[in-house]
Image 1: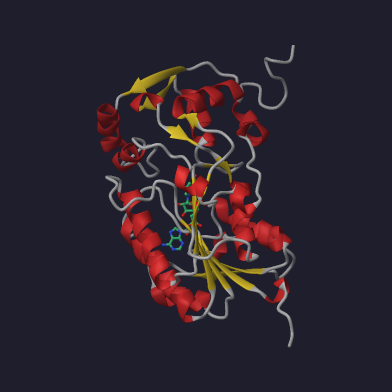
Image 2: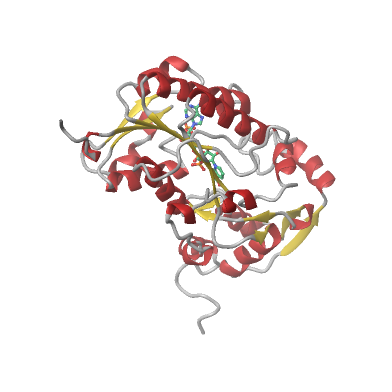
Length: 324
Ligand SMILES: NC(=O)c1ccc[n+]([C@@H]2O[C@H](COP(=O)([O-])OP(=O)(O)OC[C@H]3O[C@@H](n4cnc5c(N)ncnc54)[C@H](OP(=O)(O)O)[C@@H]3O)[C@@H](O)[C@H]2O)c1
């Protein structure tokens, strides 16, 4: 009998070209796994190549809304990982079709080919949520666990890292806006988690060190309100801006208009999401379904965020007002 090594293990990653995708590809390449990145535009996935050895990463075309392309991408894979997610719906990219139907197609294909599966959802996934994002994420989890009861599901809180869409977005807004909005007064609590830690947790699940059929909730070492996070961003980029409380109804009104922008900064659905805290639940901690339970020590934002937010300072990396 020959023993299967990581070199012989083929992992298909849907959404492998995204923010979490590239960190995960790197973590798995370091472990010598073979990677098939299933992406809508393989021609735009060239940035993955330097993350592994020559020939270790191969990009193929797949769209989770099209089951035949999913089938083809899963063929011969030992492990299938679904990272596909959207923040707003547009055209055929609807929350239902991507988060629920798409996730189900991936799980059905993985089950049919006898592959193991890891699925990434989000903290706040809830079938009874007023937010379509949260509802579709819950439906996706349910469909995945129905098709593949041994799958492991990960729900991260907001992820941070050099290419994130949270700290970068607000730091960028602070460059040209006199004030930053605090939706609902900025009281919503978050537990930002380093994208590299989430990638490590998924890699440990691929190694076989996570519970099958469990839903893990991944948060960083600290819980902070949205307002505290905005204060942190402004301190890091050394800019003074007004923090303007925006009651939920007013934010929703503004989002009704902003939602039509090509990349909307706020949608009515996101306002609904902001009404609930985005933190690891007591049940997840109690049942050891956390980063720490996987042996990953969560990284603080102070360790990572200044290493990429410096570019939003007036003086860039050259001189800070703190150095005098
Ligand atoms: N970022 C966060 O703070 C955060 C927090 C909680 C949960 N999550 C979840 O974590 C996962 C990864 O997030 P991320 O920040 O890495 O997102 P991302 O950078 O937007 O990546 C999402 C990936 O999904 C792909 N995709 C979108 N629609 C697709 C479709 N129909 N078929 C195939 N691929 C499709 C995108 O590829 P294209 O280039 O083709 O669009 C992209 O590679 C998502 O499920 C997200 O909901 C993220």
